[in-house]
Image 1 (cartoon, rainbow over the protein chains, first blue to last red):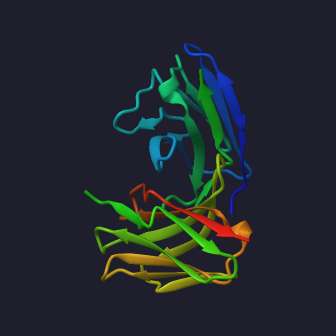
Image 2: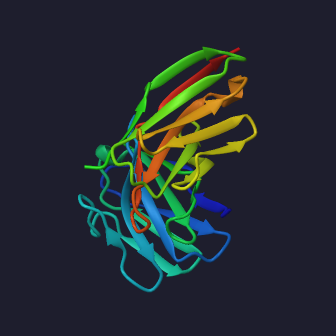
Image 3: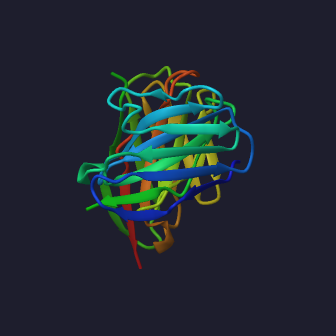
Length: 114
Length: 112
């Protein structure tokens, strides 16, 4: 199983600002996934991040709002840009290695935008 | 549209009770199914993964079954404890190259 460290665990941010969330895995993985969980809802996939290429975004999510970096095979960041209260959610990173097998998640980042 | 449904949305039981959580999916041709636990405001912890060729998986007091023909999976928790209180999520992968589709979760409270 993979051990995933996600930082910060929670934050309260002012509207209009940006927050970068970090995800560190204890082993090399090909793909990393970023999810959003809005209050009382289930998980929605934001994007898939591959090392050495641009992230692939799901419908309804755009790079300008959620830029993602993937500088190496163990690390990724998700930035939530120009935040509004509607961005208040739990953001989670996940890995599956190989893709299609058991999925593992980080501890989540609980974001509140005021 | 391929969907995953979990009923009930919330469940409250006394400590020591055996219980069953349900997960339904719309397409029987799934690749695998995974059960997770989520504590409030936290990430997901993988509990059990069932491949399409399997009928059940067991881990400690947990047993997950898969019936593809009826489009259902159940998570059985034996001798429930207050520490089992959490939200339980079911996620289905419909094809090897597809992403996980999550159910809405069942919020479980086990009362002492």
